[in-house]
Image (cartoon, rainbow, N blue to C red):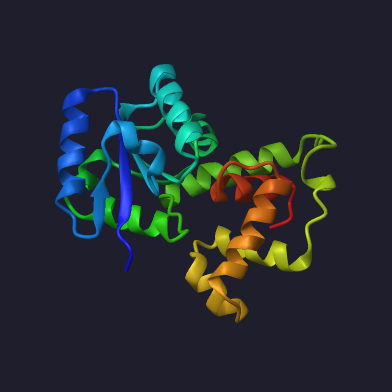
Length: 207
């Protein structure tokens, strides 16, 4: 299996050193130095909370690397979830996950196309989507996306937490085909990540 190349985003140097050390000790994970972070398969962002500075740093890194982000954070306020999804975050864990194996597992899942949000945060996302669904959708939103039934089916599977391999098995097709379908979905929905695409679909009541 190919090694997963990982970069770390953290404002606190002690946090960055600690997370980097934990990642470097994991088999199959290759920690990249800052000058090479654009080559990363996954970004691990670690913060105590998501204030404006943290979100700005994570957004800048996500824009440069354009790969899924695993977020380690201890405090998450109302509204932080959508800001995180906007920064390509696919998994959210407490910072303690850096030392108990959950971070490494989330990184490998993210590299394979998976995503995992805690149940309480999924509940927040559903509530937010339902609130937005009551509002008027913009013409540039999902209404004009013209999603095909197969693409909607893939969206539903993504919402259920299935990764690329599981979706491919369920649809009896290759992982490459699933990745192409997801790429089309995210492009049409103007989404930055898979959870972001799911949020758009939930907003329009498609899933």
